[in-house]
Image (tube, rainbow over all chains, first blue to last red; front, side):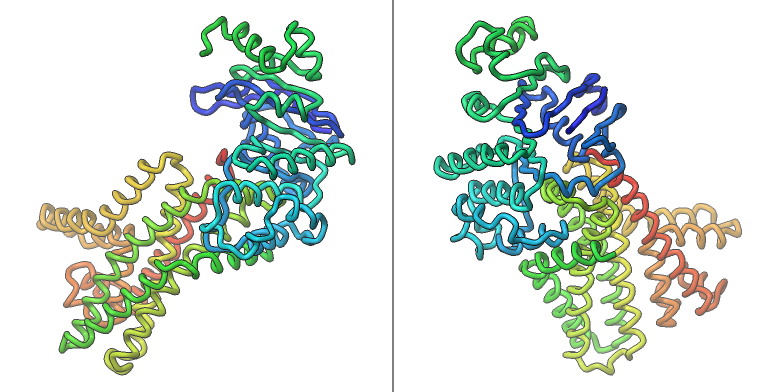
Length: 240
Length: 262
């Protein structure tokens, strides 16, 4: 589905991605985890075309995405921090994205309901709380029914009801065959949602496989402990 | 093209709802009205207005354009995750920023002239003033976009645009005067002309001087331009150089935007 082949990326002297190769399977939820600055967001941004790798290739359904932009019609993205034009209303922002994507708005209407966005629809973005901006961002990621959904810290900032509803929605999207990539620092959430896990440290993959295999191989009962052990082992105890 | 128009449409509906565009417009309205009502000689009032335009518009355009890019990085990322190409987004954002600024200036100044009595300086001179303000807005917004895209650090980017503004609006004239004074024994008219062509603010000034036929009031470069090119050719040359000033930063900005990692 998504094939990343030997990508390298440097920002100045900082070598962020070191010969990364991975195969993200269709119909699965893949979590990308790792300490801060390990390259999680850079991988996501490379798949989205926001960051251009120095070398290597990224293929979606067998076609390279480098230099293309139309492939993004099949991708819904929820960034870590959402930002929209301050003076537009929620309704206008959703309409704007629909207009830019050339897609109709009635594809996935009940999303607005489950995220409890209906009372916010006529408010200007500058009058929205941070949580409601995140809800809008979540709504935009899913509303156009994309086959690939990329979520960067999706539940950070969402209230418990919206967070629970949204997680349920993510699982439903997987059930219908969507490919989902997410990052999160909440290990319980990853245990709850993800099938596969990609563990990065310092721009290198140290584990790529199923969540249950990672837990089993560590001899721990919880993912959080397994991840903590793995970070300590791979950084020789230098990570605090 | 349809995509660029869509982006401009959303940018305009966002920007025209903010208060600063009204403040900017009212500033030019009051300025124009007061200058033409309190200065007995309308030609002098037009020159004073021109000199203020040459300082204010570049400064506002560079600061607004730079701040816009830095404050909108998350928004730009969000739009870039949609199936649109970078070129359309860049042009859409650039025009979506320049058009409200230029419109604010045009509306304020035009209303100020009408309120002062339309015939005071004549239709042609008003159009010249408006064209200059319009062109400077687009030129300095493109410089702001270029710098803000090239430099990720906000403080550094803002510092650079302010230095560029200071250089082109104040220091440049000092350098020209220094060259004239230091090399006064030599025939340096052509050098001075070439130097003037390299500064968009000087070009705007020359364009106005030639069109307004007041080169004697505006110093050395204006007189030189009149002498060398005559009014018509001078206007064509200054317009051509201003177009180059408009195109070059925009093309470099587009190139940087295309390569940039967000």
